[in-house]
Length: 261
Image 1 (cartoon, one colour):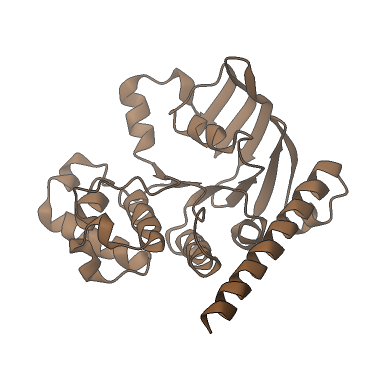
Image 2: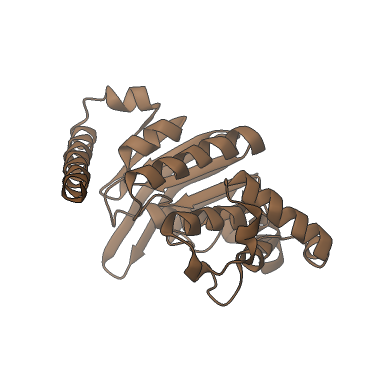
């Protein structure tokens, strides 16, 4: 279980998080929504200790993250897979080498046979062919890079998966593919997931519960149905904004198809 209790974080005069409390239950997928720049990624990085709160407590599996020593934090991170917003692949390494970096057990990492098998399995889980392993990131599409990033995140067989804007920059078709993978990995691997996003449609599809981060605070938490039925002004404003963006995107796609026909 992941618990954030009364988290505060500021950068100089910019208050990013102001008393944020949130719980992620074992086995669930929680979507953390909010406008760009509201502190969603900062919240995510608190969970695996990439950032420390100015005040408050972050607890993962009973461990107080900000109090852990370097070795203890490294051991915790071995149980947490992190999917970076832009993939964060190493351009000079092949896909196989990138995925291998996600294997956190040193004995397994040193075993070439184990690593080759694990790379193939991770590629299968993200719906990529085995021969992709020998390609370099520059040879991949944006959607494939995202999937390789997910493959690397699951290579160490984590208990938790943290997704930082997994569908950002993707067209609707590839975004749906990534959303489907989030669901598949939850079902096949039983991982507990936190998905940071500003995409309401995709988040409502994959999430068991949704939390809205608004003006440095958690404004609402509930099932997708409960969020859709909320009368809170901030929730309504965010949902209305997302609907407008979806309509603009749909119109843009329709125009591209019309011009290409």
